[in-house]
Amino acid sequence: MNKITITIDGPAGAGKSTVSRSLAAQIGYVYVDTGALYRGVAYEIKKAKLDYKDHEELVKLLKEIKFDCKMQKDAFKLISNGNDISDKIRTTEISMLASAVSALPEVRSGLLGIQKDIAEKYNAVFEGRDMGTVVFPHAQHKFFLIADLKIRAGRRYKESAENLSKKSSDNLENLNKIEKDMKKRDHNDSTRVESPLKPASDSIVIDSTNLTIEQVVEKIRNNLLIS
Image (cartoon, rainbow, N blue to C red; front, side, top):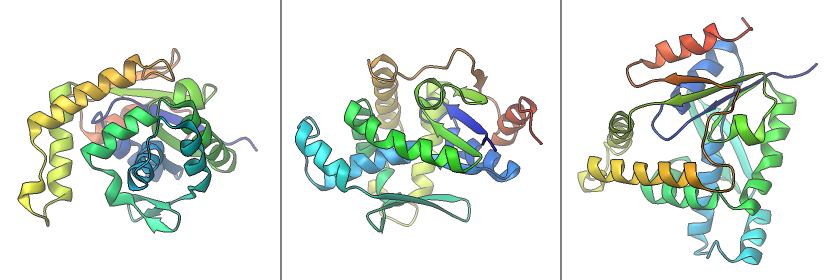
């Protein structure tokens, strides 16, 4: 029996992760945070103090990385070589590095097989930046979320504040810096030659600027031909 693949793409802060998790939970599908996979690679590159432009060393590192994913309550957890790195991959530094390495053919090729294997085993919701254009061009359902830059930066700032609430306030990222970094990442992701960030020609674009998560999920479900 063929499995159903739903892709939800879009820039950082558009609500992809929360919407995808909620949607998957409601319809009983597996949720796959593909962005976390790229962040995981970025984290391992930083941890190894590797020059990612060194082709041979990068390929060697990619062969050594063993990723595993699991859901813990409503949270997506990324396990790398037996270690939970979920909290370590959500910093601005790792986000920017992930944006840079995600354009590398070696990295994309290394993660492509993992994603396709999941799609062959489960009905799944894949969240990322090129799920509907490159990884699953024949997915049954494709969506692309957008939102105003300031709104997206505010969401990410709030996210950071909540995640760091038990740590030193000195570690809290400045809202202006988040917005500046997000704008730079938007430009990098949308102008790169390899798998640029853009809606698939047959995707449904949803502007989440003035919508709640529940409203976005409802819009998506209204466009699905499944219960």
